[in-house]
Length: 459
Ligand SMILES: Nc1ncnc2c1ncn2[C@@H]1O[C@H](COP(=O)(O)OP(=O)(O)OP(=O)(O)O)[C@@H](O)[C@H]1O
Ligand SMILES: [Mg+2]
Image 1: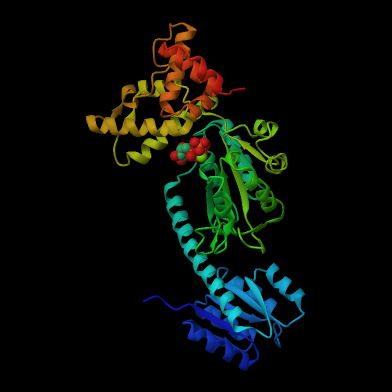
Image 2: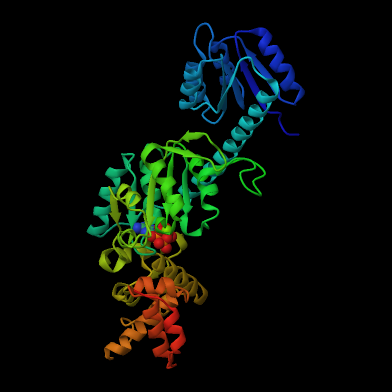
């Protein structure tokens, strides 16, 4: 059976405690009581308490100080403070120090009951999320091996990243697709003082405009149709840790304003709530797009852009750091083929060194995976170029062709690598989608239909 939620009542007035205890017990909660702060602390050290209801005015240690100490022992357990009427300052101070809510004396039991229910819900939710993040963190640290950085260009990036890891500044990580933006963000998180707290990754591109606010900032029960329960957002889940806003260039404009407030003040509001909450998160952002252009064209808020841009790390594409290619390939192979003597032959090494890797590190990982599989299937130890099955590129084919032919091969190879996704392929090629569309029409020999060109907008 489920364990009943446990509530600790801390108040020097025994009558008050008894009253509240009776009511809450009737609602199925397990109640613990303390007449002053010190015994409350020992109870919390020895029991799992889901919520503490704390009187502010007590002889000895006051409720606000107790609140801070309780949060140190169990940061996820919520605290509700009980203040005398007219002492709004202590209520505000309590909220500032992380209280979930406050109620004023004389307490109306119905109101108290509602606050208690919501606070306990929040504790249970945070505990659950914490478990998930914890689990995720553990699986991540098992799977994320070290970052391979042999080239001087990449070592410079890591040096810089290491310094930034020691700070709480937000950092913008830029780089083409597959260059390792996410692994670098993870690396920064692991090297930072926040490493014991969660790293929450938000894929901004995958959040629809209607969902982005609720996902990021959370929502209260009834905030919109379908909001049956209140739920913390990703920002709250990252409290104490790091929030990676992946593909930040894709985030909807209204959410950009609210993000700015988180960045500048550490404050946010759940959807449907009037209460502003504070969080302690370090923000990392990643983008494969040119944010400068997006800002200049008005698709990305200038103020957010400037706030993010204070520190930026640019990961060079693999073609600009060729010294990393073979170490990366060896790294991926050793992960896949532990305990075997499978290795790259000289010809395979040459082919890899000579190829431009438009899909960057991710493409190397995939090619190596294919090769290891193919070689294992064929029962050979030495990997040859055809095992790698690299796409037909200008490098691996006869280079004595016209520029037009070379261009065509390259464009088709990139498109194939991007799984036929024209948006991504155009991005890698550094041309507009419309331009790519025209090229593809030309290669296929079909004539452009006049209507299509009018509809497709380009720069
Ligand atoms: N320097 C590196 N050392 C080891 N593995 C790396 C390195 N860089 C990238 N990888 C691996 O390459 C793959 C792609 O990396 P990642 O997902 O971080 O790229 P990305 O820049 O975020 O790509 P995208 O823009 O498509 O999101 C991952 O499997 C990652 O572990
Ligand atoms: Mg990524």
